[in-house]
Image (cartoon, rainbow, N blue to C red; front, top):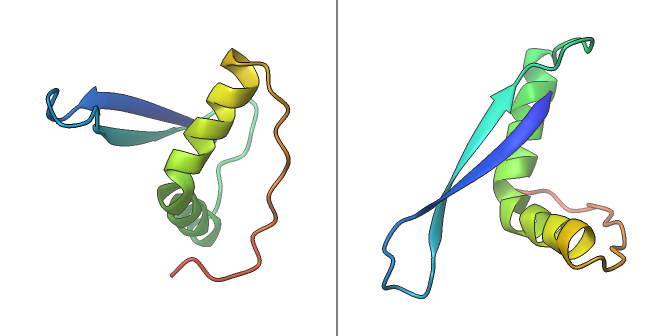
Length: 76
C-alpha cells in the first residue's frame, strides 16, 4: 500500500492552512491489506497526517534525524 498526501491551498490568505487529500494506492508486488487492516491504517494516517508530513520534511528535506514514535493510546 502506498500513501500519497496531496496538499491544496484552501484559503491562500488564511495562515497558509492546507486541505489535504489522502490517496491510498496499490503497490506492485505487494499483497493488499485486508479490510480490518486497511480500516486501521486509514484511521492511523488520518489522525497522524500532519505529524507524518512534518517528519518526512524534517528527514528528507532538512536532513534532521527523526526519532520513532510508539503509539500506546487509542486514537479515538
